Length: 175
Image 1 (cartoon, rainbow, N blue to C red):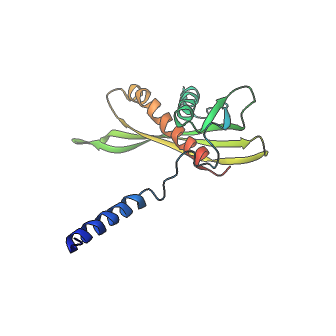
Image 2: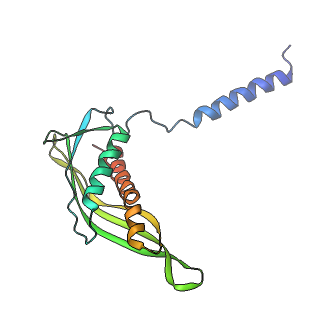
Image 3: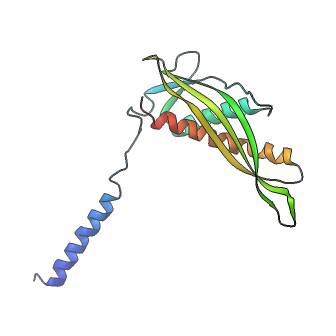
């Protein structure tokens, strides 16, 4: 009872299984930094704000801590006990017009707000800097009648994006 249809059915099933299995070929389970999740700890120091925009230091500190906890690869530490010391400086806060009002080509409707931080991470075990670069966070703000209020509402989103980018560099980098 080895009909050609039966052989074709088995061949199709094997081919489908191979295709499904190959989709996961590049996926790595667990930490991608080369160490088990939670085996390394990080101490985060507040980033001084060199811009004229208030409240960035506190918002970034909270966002980085939240993102590190959400990711779970690194454990948060305090009081000089972390394997990694994260520090940096908030250097730039920019708002750029993206779209204009439909009937008024001089009034900006949507802004892209971006923040740039110089980020450094020191591996205390080896004494080497494992990260030293500028990292950017961005978000869009709908320019309402009160731009200050719109930016205040968008600030957590902006800092979450920056924190996500910093955490990604820390977790997926080579230690």
